[in-house]
Length: 202
Image 1 (spheres, helix red, strand yellow):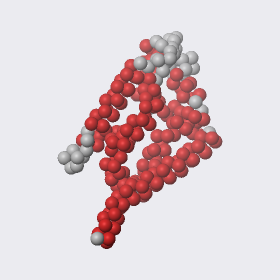
Image 2 (cartoon, one colour):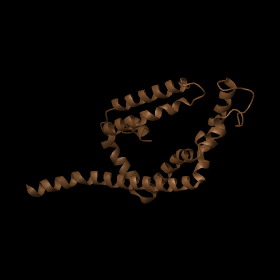
Image 3 (cartoon, one colour):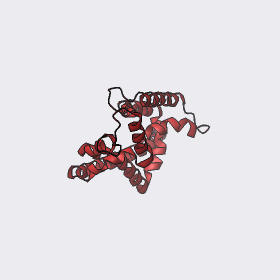
Image 4 (cartoon, helix red, strand yellow):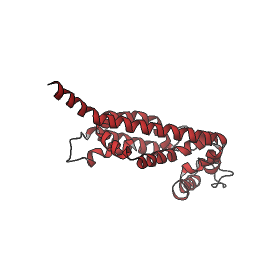
């Protein structure tokens, strides 16, 4: 979400304030190369692989680039988004929902493997073997048209460890959002306070 906002920021604020579009263009180019390149090169280690997952190690660096380039400009929209408690709670719910498949997979990886990748017992079971076009077509159908791939991992959330982890992650993410809201609010007030100090001294 942060990368998307950083990439769209020059277009959204065009004409209202000066925003350098060059970092956004670099981010778009890097993301396009990663997605297209890794999606085409989906079996770097043999067997059957989901290539775009290999973009994950790049995400922290790209997020850091986005923050360095547009962190100051993004502060005000972030402050407005998180100002109302109901919007803060809604953002927290969305972020936690996006994290649930990862939590589920951490506690029960088998349903994902059996429900999606297993050839002998999964929904794509058949006489075809790993690497054949028939298997890939079935997996493509499952991932994009029947059920999003991340939902196959949700059974792990129902375990005891999954419930505890989900609650802990939800509390942590909500706390991070509250701290972020306070931080961007202070960033908005600070310049005003400095100007008042200068006036009083003079």
